[in-house]
Length: 389
Ligand code: NAD
Image (cartoon, rainbow, N blue to C red; front, side, top):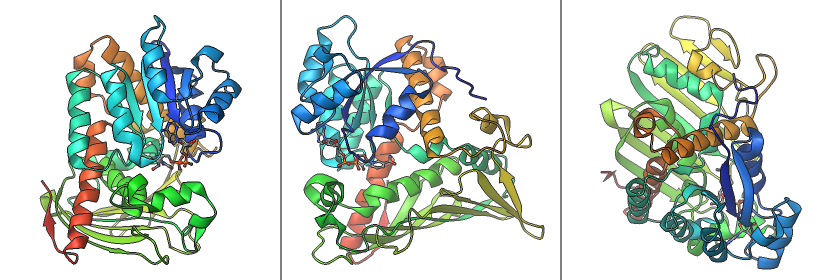
């Protein structure tokens, strides 16, 4: 159980790019990273508007000389200091991830970057290579993977309790873009332009989460071929707001993935069902403390977070004990704790430890980009099957 234990042997000196005042996702990054004192937030270039970024940094308690108007200045000035930052989180719109990540890696910093990692698989491979060659940790914030019941699902599957895995049915289908919201909210607008969002809207935005969840639960899962049909329901939208993907995976596993922003009435709609030859599991992100475990011919079991019967690796991330609900903030804290442990190990050059220590990493980020790229290629060819290497 995590009960205030730090995880890393020291606090990582940390800065942020993006995630400024009023942004969607900046707050959960800070809340997660600062939760167990694994990180110290000592610098930041939080906003596209330099002055707003500086003002916000001050509000967050960053010392005045380390509140920066842009990330280039931050990298330049921090490199001159003995107590300069060691790691940077990038929580900016998609179109900037590649450039900023690359600059941070070249400055010798560990990176945590938002998904989708970048626009092309070629860029993603370059980032992965840069991180690996320079012994730098590169985490990608697939924030749902830190939920305790996701670990439990992975354990059940890895132990063979479901039998041979046959099917994965997964969706991330919310309804926020059912109407023309891009006229009202800036964070909606950039998501619909290829310049800022990349070659896809909804597949990059949330389809990558769904695919990552499947990869996290089913060890060794790989895409072999896929077909994808994208739709644009919102008038005048450049990018798709709905997509259906069929995926042939290794070992005969077949996956059906639905990503949508126009699923009217659905707040969030992230679900996954993994079907094996003996049993199935089902997990719904809006009820993250429960995992349905359905053995063919037996009554349905609902496994509860924090319960004594869970695997030890699931209970390891427990923060409050059974009965009290945990949620997305705890999942993110677990993920950031792993980032910190990995960064700490990398700074001691403990390669033996890092060989087996898992965290959502740049390779998984790159797999997400590869997935989106293949979906776009398939859709362009009229939803043809395309092979994925
Ligand atoms: P947003 O538009 O709400 O916020 C973006 C923030 O970045 C703003 O504060 C903006 O001023 C700042 N910014 C933009 N360009 C910048 C630059 N060059 N330098 C410094 N700051 C800059 O966007 P959002 O919804 O928070 O999304 C940000 C990223 O997070 C996207 O890549 C998105 O896909 C991702 N995201 C991930 C999750 C998740 O669950 N992991 C959830 C939501 C968003």
